[in-house]
Amino acid sequence: MIGIDLVEVDRFTLDDKFMSRIADEEEVAYIKTSPALSLQRLAALWAVKEAVIKALNLGGSGVSFRDIKLCHEKSGKPYVELSGKAKQEMDAFHYGQTVEVSLSHTKNYATAIAIIK
Image 1: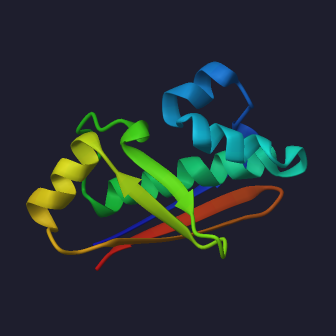
Image 2: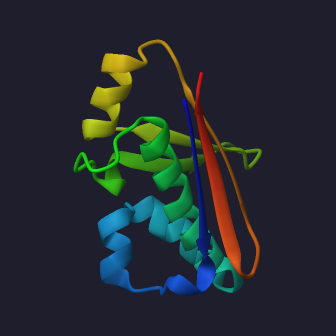
């Protein structure tokens, strides 16, 4: 299963209420560590969560964006941790598989892809 998302960075604002709905404290802290890249990072966070939802075929299921956590290895490589409904779906239909993600952003766009393998 594959999911992909592309968003325009200027659709986003660094609104704390919005960020708390889609991200946990660690994700928000990561977004804010680089003021020059904050909007791009927020857009990429949205895109990766959308891509995972698409890969898991959870569109319209009521899954929370907070059920998908974007993390980074020391090398900077992104990965996701699933909880709640996203984890239930993964365990039920993709047990033993992993979700691989990749994301990229520019001043204007952010994109992400998620592959379940």
